[in-house]
Amino acid sequence: MAIPTTHFPSCSVPNDVQREGLPLIHGESLSRSFQAKERVVAISELTFGIREGQITAIIGESGSGKSTLLKLIYGLLEPDGGEVRYRGWRVPGPREKLIPGHDAMRMVSQGFDDLNTYANVWDNVASQLSNTDLEAKHRKTEDSLRRLRITHLAKQRVADLSGGEKQRVALARALVNEPEVLLMDEPFNQVDASFSEILQQDIRSIVEETGLTVVLVSHDPAEVLSMADELIVLKTGRLVAAGQPARLYTQPPNAYTARLLAKSNILTQAEASLLGICAGTDVVIHPEWLSLKEDPRAGFDVVDTQFKGFYQVLTVRHAGMTLHALAMPHVDFRKGMRVAVHVTRFHPVNA
Image (cartoon, rainbow, N blue to C red; front, side, top):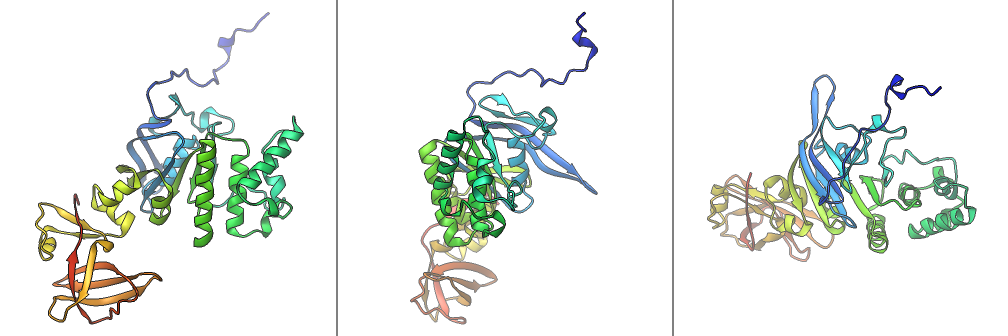
């Protein structure tokens, strides 16, 4: 005799309904907090959208909730409130899956936790594929290594690789099963600057060739400005700006975004008036929007110079106001020199 199913508690995922007209990844009124000595709010009432086939970067100060948001998108964390949807379907949390994480996504963490450091590169990547079709397994592994330019490392142990090489292995391992979304947490932290640029170009090429959607967390404005199609800017777990990097850079909606992207000068109305700017709000002036010229009669003093290769960063001061400007290295600016400051551009901004 059949046993009535009502005698057993249900373990199935709650019924869900697909919502039409949403971006590929959509978060609505998303909240998440952690309980330490005190309750810490990591994400608060956050609504956002991520479009398909693009690179979206989540940026913000340390503790702004970037990594927490990435884990909520993947389904590694359960939201306290709100929801994340993928292709209109709600992303299940860790209590609803035996192995947490959305099946269409793969995540690469900062510490390369998924890598088997004592296995070789080939086995690390190939282990993600089943043995049902050995020919396809070999072909896909080879393709993944080729795309990440690590075919020559196939027989080397992961433990013997550099940080940059391990990063490429982690990416090859994540991409070998052809996920629709790649999530990356500070992907270039352990990569030298010169190799970081090449890796960024390779990821961009993969996106263009395959239509992959990439969501990454970064603290480095140089990375996101050159690589991302869209930015999501977080401050203490809240969305403060979103849009294309060029627009947010040239027209930042608030001082926080301006400082993140350009280490910008933020001037009050009174300070701006000393530079001949009449504005009804605070203003943003990026360092490259200032032009300096030696003038013994001028009011600004050079208080610091930093050589940066093809340019230098100058710190000038007048009447308690400090400004940072860029200059070409062939111009001989020195500490103590008096300079005139000319503003070539500024942008009104909220504090």
